[in-house]
Amino acid sequence: MRVLVFGATGMVGQGVLRECLLDPSIDAVQTIGRSETGVVHAKLRNLVRADLTNYSDIEADLCGFDACFYCLGVASAGLDEAQYERMTFGLALAAAESLARLNPTMNFVFVSGAGADSSEKGSLMWARIKGKTENALLRLPFKAAYVFRPALVQPANGERSKTAWYRVFYGVTGPILPLFRRMFPRYLISTEEIGLAMIQVAKSGAPKKILESLDIRALCPTPHSTT
Image (cartoon, rainbow, N blue to C red; front, side, top):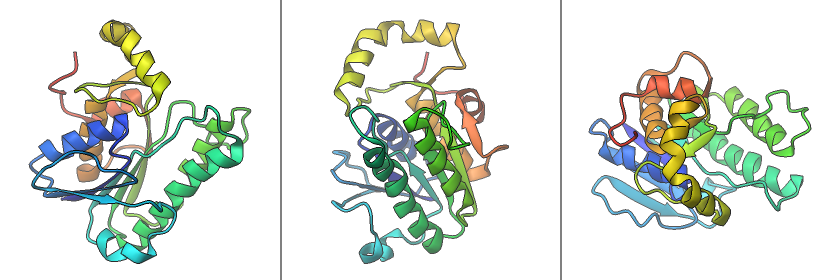
């Protein structure tokens, strides 16, 4: 299996990339992003690209993939609606529309978030735009497309967020996250579980198109790092 990973330098993307490189059924992994991952591996190729809105000049590099794990995302704090829509809906659709045309047998998995608004009419700006993005992706002519909606994500193997206040949050709450997980299992999932579940979906599909944290956990084998 050949896999594309968008957003591999973010916290979730770091975990997903790690699981892809560990999985013997995945022969090749290509990341796409604005910066290097810093990871060196025999089956990994890092494609660094400043423009994530148009892929017409690199279509040859995007062909022949079985799955795409789209982990690219930004926090809505400090952004107005137009900016957040451009960086969420705009970037995801630019990539997905090209990939659907070039790889019609691909499974596409999009990392959204708990609370995304499929009606696109709610009062929360970020939720409306996430829901709009989900709806548009699910309509594209992939073999199949899926949406992961994790709530609170636990870094399992040293992954670090690129957002400063997220790093502060995880620094403060890290020691109590295992307890929180036991008390509220439906709200917390690890980066490792997300990666393992994505690979499983790429191989065998899933019983539903939109998967919340418990659905994601049910799809993956027992993680080897999460307590």
